[in-house]
Each structure stands twice: as C-alpha cells, then as structure tokens.
Image 1 (tube, one colour):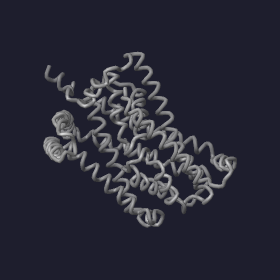
Image 2 (cartoon, rainbow, N blue to C red):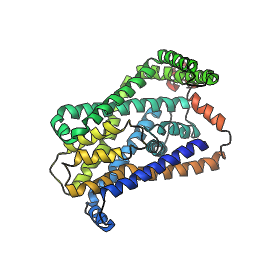
Image 3 (tube, rainbow, N blue to C red):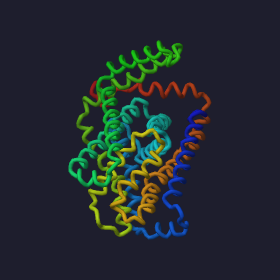
Image 4 (cartoon, rainbow, N blue to C red):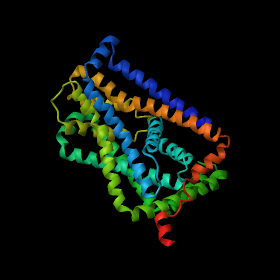
Length: 376
C-alpha cells in the first residue's frame, strides 16, 4: 500500500525514534544500574498504571468515536472496531512522521480499502484536524490565563517554546480554516504560488501543470467540505465535545503517573496545565513523535512537581504508555490489517493508480443519502 521510498522514510523515522529513546534513557539514568531503574519503575502503584493504560486507550478510542459519528452522519454503518482500527493506524503513522503528517493519508487509504468513499474520509480527516488543533489551543489559552503564575514558574526559560507553539498551532488552524471556508480563493492563490515558483525554477516547470491539476482536484474536495461545515454547525459542537474528552484523557496521564507514586503536592488541574503546555510546545515541531524535545520539556516543566528521583521513571512510564506502546500496538494493527488486505485484494502492483486515487481524495463525494430519499 505504500511505495518503497515512503517505506524507507518510515524506517528512518522509526530508527530516529529508537535512537532518541535510547539516548534519552541513557541521559536520564546516567551512572545508574538497570536494576535500580526497574526498582523505581516497580514502585509505581499497578492499579493507577492500569488506569493509565485505560486513559491512553480512551485517547485512541476518542478519535474512533468521532470517525464513527461522522460516518453515521453520512448514513454509513461502520462497526466501532473498524473505526478503532483506523485510529490505531492513524496514530501509528502520525507518531513516526514529522509533524504527524502521515497519519490521516494512511487512514484514508485503509478506509478506501473498506469501501468508504474518499469524499467522506477526506472531510472527516479535515474536520478532525481542525478541531483537534483548535481544542489544544483553547485548552492552552484556558490554562495559561487561569493558571498563569503556576505555568510560568514551572515552565521558566522554556516559555518561548510555548509561545512559538501557540503561534504555529494558530497559523496551522488558520490555514486549514481558510482552505476549508474559502477554498476557491485558496485554490487561486495556490495556482499563483505554483506558477511563481515554476518561473523561478524552484519547482520543475514541466511538472507545474500536473501540480496545478492535482491542486484543483484537492480543492474541489474542500468546496464540499466548506458546504458541509456551513450546513452542519451543530455537529461541530458534538465533535468538539468528544475531542475535549479525548485530549483530556491523554493529558491526565501524567497526573495518573504522579498519583501512582503516592505524590500529593500538586492538583489535577495544575498537572494537566503543564502537560497541555508541553502539547502546545512540541506538537507542531518537525520531529517524528516530537521525540527528544518532549522528554526535555517534561524534565523542565515537572522538576518542581515530581520528587527529583522520580522524574526519570515518570518520563519512562508516561512516554512508554502514551507513545511507545501506541507505536507498538498501532504497528501490529497496521501490519495485521495489511496482511488481511493483501489476502483479500492481492498485492498492490499499480502504485501510480493508487497514488492518483489518493490525490483525487473525494472528487466523487456522493450526495447526502438523506437528500436522495427526500428527492425520491
């Protein structure tokens, strides 16, 4: 399903994550015996850690609920477990690609294999992307305002990274909203940019027409997305509500790890506030899984919250559950799904055809089935 070049890139990204993870481990536990590390990890209350596993699962399943809800709006009956499969695949590819760029295209491909129109999957992924980032920014603003002194005192010199994160996230949301709400204008600007870059020979002039054709096909989808959003504002509130719960289920993981060590100096909201700031600071950085910088932020932000000797094992538990475990399970789900698809459809041989299908993404978005019934 994925061409050789992408497989190589994914392999490099996974290797990068593994190397960074190893280096992080060595730095956190420099001059420490492995047996001592495991003793510190073993100190954590297993019941609390079970809640941590549940919280991570709720985070993954939260997106599945949104996917199923939006497919239901399109009168598509898709089992929840299948939506859960799409979520695990999406998070797997998101975590091994810079700025989480690989997750949604992969989800769309696997949805298409299950007979879901690219039109539906494109719209679903677009709405999820906008709301997911918007909720992060809104939560960040909330905690920055109402827990300002606590946040600033613990983040310290890293506040500039949080501000940059706010800027990047807001710019990303603004871009998506402009593309979605003003797709015709955005398409016109996009064509001008391609022609300008072609004149400067920054891109190959011989390929500019093909790029413009692809751009037009993509923005045709956003015209339909714009119409959907304008006509279904009520559903956006429902999706936002689910996304808040989804985000919160992951942000509370640090508090769960905190409680697993019997600590009781900071409140639930204070710990969540710092974890939200980490999300704001690192999610838009062009690093696979924001590996390395996330751990650095955790050490800095929480050094006054966790006991000094518990910072290192707390990072391992937090990232182990929320990141590495998701990569492992998501990778297994992706592999198993790929094997089933190969057995069902045969090995993909026409890569160019597959690429063209993904580029078209939903030009053939069917009319709302409810409207069809009314017309009949």
